[in-house]
Amino acid sequence: MKKVLLATAMISLMLMGCTQNNQTENTTDMSTVNLTQEWDKVFPLSEKVNHKKVTFRTQYGLTLAADLYTPKTGEKLPAIAVSGPFGATKEQSSGLYAMKMAERGFVALAFDPSYTGESSGEPRRTASPDINTEDFMAAVDFLSKQENVDADRIGIIGICGWGGIALNAAAADTRIKATVASTMYDMTRVSGNGYYDSDNSEEKRHAARENIAKQRTTDPMAMAGGVIDPLPSDAPQFVKDYYDYYKTERGYHKRSGNSNDGWRIIGTIGYSNSRFLYYINEIRSAVLVMHGADAHSRYFGEAAYKYMTEGKAEGYNFTGKPNPNPENKRLLIIPNASHCDLYDGGYTEPEGNGEPKNMIPWDTLSEFFKENLK
Figure 1 (cartoon, helix red, strand yellow):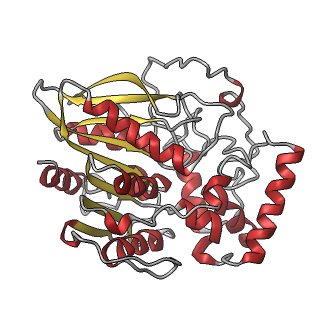
Figure 2 (cartoon, helix red, strand yellow):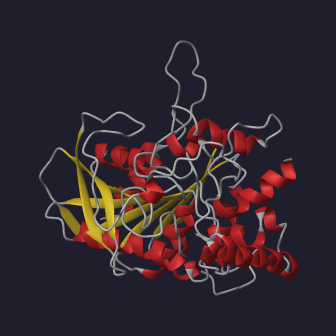
């Protein structure tokens, strides 16, 4: 059972076999974007910030839906675009990150990627390294045009699979002055090589391609399923962690693929045949890679950091020159934190009668951006 779960999770971070099959998003006409105006996040709105729904266009002609969080001040401010995890929506982790950054003085935008959530694109639940990298750059376009934003002081945060996408965007777009990759996956590596590169062979990739080819012929619209439900008793701990976030009141959302029917089976194949961190060793702007010490995905962040600074890393079949600005790159490991703890902070048991301690170092993130968005 564990072997089956791990192999299936490779494709979309989540697992096939979800018994709850919510097709609402996939059958909705997305030729126009209709934004939900009520507050439907998995976290309460902070009294310290203003909030409004916005939209913006990408160079591929898609309209992205987003939540804009702003401090209650009218001055020109630094700004941050946020997205992730891969398969989640802005009502989940990315919205929380954006709101927390707005509390600390940043204009912050949490957006739904193309083909997901309230954003446009057909067929639904489709992903592409190029399109998703453009999503981040289009968010920077939007922020740079806001009257209350200093266009020379824009950063980004990518969570989970969007951590790798954030690094790719930072390598491509010099307007991005600071980047945080939180609890990151390298989606191209895990999709092509499997977890811990256990499927890194021509034979296994060929077999996977044969299966995808058959799927395109038989049923290209079939869904892969989100987090497995019901949860098997022998599921790996990281699968239990995903379930605890996406399938419970803690993080469930009706528009989230991970909470419901997942990606289209063929919807993420672009990641399997790409390696999109090739130029991250040339990022001159500031980068903070943040990971939980106990996260199953920790090796993605550590390898990305090592390649970004040194131009080589275990698991990468390409090498480059050492980074020209290694001094503004940082790897932050959070003690006792799992992968999903950095989605919403999780908690650690307090001493005495105190409140549970959030595991995301919000003030550390704020200080990183303030230092590098000058």
